[in-house]
Image (tube, rainbow, N blue to C red):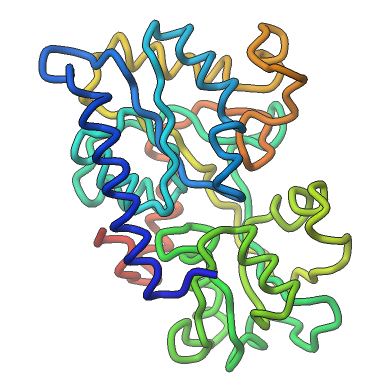
Length: 310
């Protein structure tokens, strides 16, 4: 698990990796669109499988844009924010909070699509408060005095909404619990299941299906004691530094073709695609900046420093 001290180290490491990647990939940006587009994301689960999970979408983007797409995995959202701010990344897969933070701290990028679990769904999900099965804790008030796993300080469902939930339950998210930054939604859930944390937070699909389908959790091994309001889906944001023509091509590709139906039907999957990303999502749906006003409202309620500072 990644604790507070490790987060800073992972940020520095990831920023260096992304910077090195961007210097070579976007070298032609001064005279127009780069020949290579850098697409950055952080893993919802195992970082080793992240590029493999996105490979069909990468192939599709290359065909639709006529550009080479270089995928870059980062260890946290702050590295992605900094890399897009400095022009090293043209396409970024954010969480809702990290997108709002990126915009708040000067990143010039436009959200064009967000992850959806099933075809036809609206792009949204929930944060879960979880405890091991059989725990006497029945609600967020019971998290007081416990060792609690969060995901990342810039995670919407793994930190911001949980923090607001704890405040509403009368628990100080800093002094009222012993916080641990697990580094990933899967890591948080698994730490709770194994007893490394007494309680924790992760987004709904990780708890309900993803880890169970992978055999890493048994059904009923975790108990959900809290569910957040619906959170706007995790967006893909395109740097405003690219031309309007290229931005339109990327937007259309995500909105209409970055889904398992299109990817399977058009030969982008080596075997049958079951998801368009590492989180088990069907694909993407069109969004705009206004959708993230709910996150901004929670930021105003919590006055969390993560909403304003990178």
